[in-house]
Image (tube, rainbow over all chains, first blue to last red; front, side):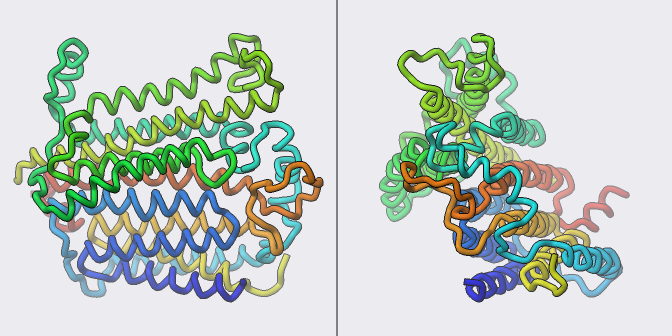
Length: 341
Length: 122
């Protein structure tokens, strides 16, 4: 097992080094997605199946799409530079930090030991008690959505804010005026159009088969997150990428249904759904996000916790998938209205 | 505590410092974002490998009726929960970084750092 980990790590290092030295940036992106994939293999070996799933979906999937969208309208050959003061500066900074980290790693627990400070105090409680508390076999989901649900709430807010920040930075026009008019009229002005819709029959056939399957699979991951690796974050990214796939095809009917405005409002509603589950328990004189105070007759405490976890996972799912589509649409739309200097 | 250098930690340190040096040394703004993501994943790797236990399995309880109170059967789930959200947040923050880079490109028509600086001086 140890030698397998070392072999995959060496491959990871090769991918990392070559992605920064390749001159063509599109090949660098593809190498980076190989890097993410080998990382997710490594995490599956290390027992972190949820993290591996997230990395495979987010790092190798969504991130690659964003980078390629950016390079689609800029150029993709980096200029060659000789050895210069920037690199000297980087070495002067880098070598002392490396020495410092090596000195510090002497005091770390040895790899894979059963008793480390990180796993001796809090995590035995999670491992032994989480099923009794929350009726959820997947301990990571229980921690993420129940024990540390404040943390996850704020992180969902961060993701939504990042989507809004993309819109504001790129100054996507049409949103400002239509934001008000779209409430009253049913115009579809802000529907996105990709520059040149594909007429390729291969792309159209493959995407029309893939989109419903991906959506179905993401819903399965969402509702099966209690029992298997998965949950709101992974399902949200998958669902968002299936919608992005619809924009890559020229004639998909989903293209006219999805607008930027709808996505922003839905993302906000997802965050709101999360916070509502917290507020319901406050109204019953409980603590914020304590699902024990949800008013459902005929359920014991653990089952209420399980239901509460499902509820906030749905909120996370909606927020994450809409934010992904918002970032994608912002990047695409701003490229359509590019004016060179 | 160990008195020898664990090779796995050495590789993590290499990835971290390589990402940092890549951010400082490369002039292309997109390549700087690549280096940033490499640096991020090295930290995530470190956290996940702290959670690893030999002879332990994935943190999903598979037989809850006979679930004895032995916490050594499962790897530590807490770093997994922390790192899972970190990955998703990093995707959306890299989206913000890419949009910043693109608005720089729209204004100055270049992705190279020194060309942008030259055009700003003019």
